[in-house]
Amino acid sequence: MSTDLSFIHLILNASPLVQFVLLLLLGVSVVSWTMIFSKSRILSLAQKSANQFEERFWSAEDLAPLYNRLTNKKYISTGMEKIFESGFREFAKLKAQTKIDPEAMLEGAQRAMRVALNREVEVLEKHLAFLATVGSTSPYIGLFGTVWGIMNSFRALGNVQQATISMVAPGIAEALIATAMGLFAAIPAVIAYNRYSDDAERLLNRYDIFMEEFSSILHRYAHS
Image 1 (spheres, rainbow, N blue to C red):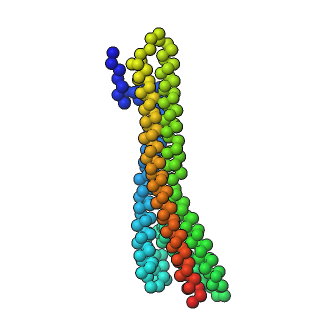
Image 2 (image 1 turned 90 degrees about the horizontal axis):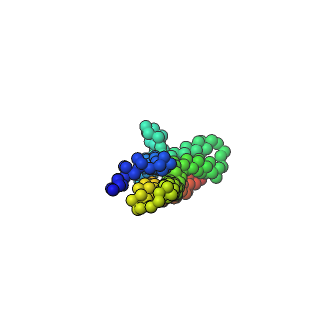
Image 3 (image 1 turned 60 degrees about the horizontal axis):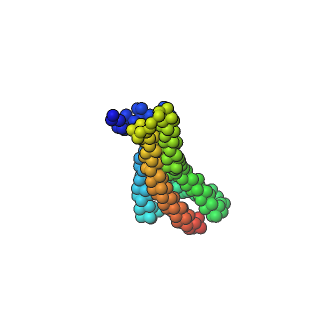
């Protein structure tokens, strides 16, 4: 007597709880891949934008024209551009006032840049926690479905006098699919989390370095 052990057959004939686990892991995997592609695009654009802005920033003889060009553009600034705009805007506003201490101007610009930096941190780190959660919990969810499926297989053996491997194989096979599905959801999420966390950290370090360098320039402007 042959037993159908095809993937689709095993899923369709699995217990309702195992099917629920598989459906849950499939949904988590789809959401995870959506976030992976979205995060890849966001980080790629942020790196490209940082490279382009640094080139324009260090080639500019005066920062005021650069600021005016950025504020008159049609798109919304992000990343390093946003940090520069926030700092220079606050610095220019304070400098236009009379009897303002140079150090107060510099501190105001630095506060504005830190606020902009914190907003960029939220953008770069968005969804990373979800990927970490998927990577750490999906194998256990799949293992739960596997344990439940194996339990059902052994419970069914209690109703027969003579057990054979052909009787146990379908139940164990359908149970192991849950483990495989858990790994299928977890592995890409873990790889993406590690990759994108490193990329985000590198970008944030570049932003921090730029803020220090820009603060030094503003320090000279404040005392000029």
